[in-house]
Length: 85
Length: 277
Image (cartoon, rainbow over all chains, first blue to last red):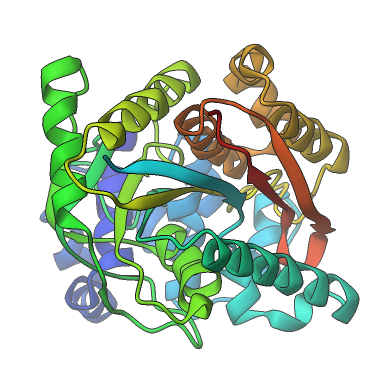
């Protein structure tokens, strides 16, 4: 488990419209390009921002990753506080 | 020779733009008034160039390469993270001054990463928008980006040393430019973590007091552990304050304003730095 590639994926998604489009169209195909294991791919595919942060992923990235998907800030904070969103 | 004639520290809070109603009218007015006071002072100082010290928010530099400190030596464009009312555009650049600082750095132990056509984020674009543009002069800038938001963080001591180096380099620039430095950053704020929205006025006032006293020892005594605990991950940006304080030779200053704006998730502190003779 490496936070480096997890951060690379989230950085790519937060800075590139092309990457965002490819991820939304086919997450598995998009994520196959990165050195991730199955568990890591699932964390990203399922927007597990709390778990990603617990692995040391920079929360500037987890927040941006969540918001770029059109999800609410209120739900993000609930999840980060380990409350039910 | 060029010389630094003034300095400031101020926030670069993007929430002001995308959620202006997050602050009360009183707090919002106070913050914008503080920016206005600083813009007026910059105009009074008859400034020819500004060195804006910002920090990447994991927007500019990715995992492939995370530079500790970057300086613009050519064209500048931003913010890459556009905001309502703050669109991406070319920003007037003083490339020659940036290149001179970088050259002096290479000769004296500061191996700058240079941006020959640098994109900047809101940490440079917001102070440019609220402090430089209102002067009515298209003041060219040198953009400096410190590693404050992404680890490995630039050590506070290194940020200070960098500021002293900037002061020395400006003094040897073959021109008569009057230069201001702007340390751009919020004080207490948590970005993206479970404490987002918490503001710590006690920590904020401690930092502003250090700035106003020009207290190098107290600034360098702030450990990353203390900053993260009391101010949050966003408060690591006060490295930009250290750099600006050092660039003005830590002569102290005056607090222009302070507002703990929970709705903007940030302790908003504003100060003018005196410049040592």
